[in-house]
Length: 163
Image 1 (cartoon, rainbow, N blue to C red):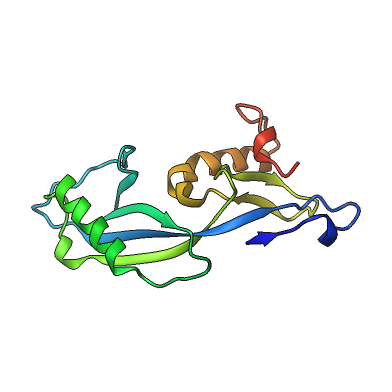
Image 2: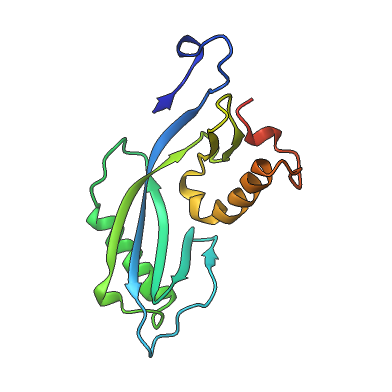
C-alpha cells in the first residue's frame, strides 16, 4: 500500500494519497475477417467484464485480486476469463491465440479517481481508478484536460481531489 500520511508530509504539503495495488487480468485475441467482434466497447455489468475492440484485436478485461505486488499470471483466472468470453461472444475473435496479461492497478479505497493539481506546479494527478481504469479513462481524461485548461468542470470535483 502506498500511503503519504501526516508524519511524511511537510507543513504545506497537500499530497495525501492512499492506494492499494489490485491485480487486474485481461486477455487479447486477434480478430479474423470472419469474426463478428463488437465495434464499440461493451461492459457486461452483471459479470463485470469489459469487451473492447482495439484495432484488429478484442481486449477482454475482468476481475481483480488483492495479492500485493504479485504480477504472476493465475492460470485459473485466465482460463475462467477465456471460458466466459467463449460463452458470451463465441464468434468475436480467435480465442485459440490469446495473449493473457496481469498487471497492478492503483486503487483508492472506493476506486474513485483523484484528479487535479497538486502543490507542485508541474504535477497533476489522474490516478486511483483501480479495476475501473479502462472504464473511467475517457471521462477522467476529459476532467483533467478541463482542469489543465483552467475551465470549470461539468460538476463539483470536491470528492475527486486531494483535499
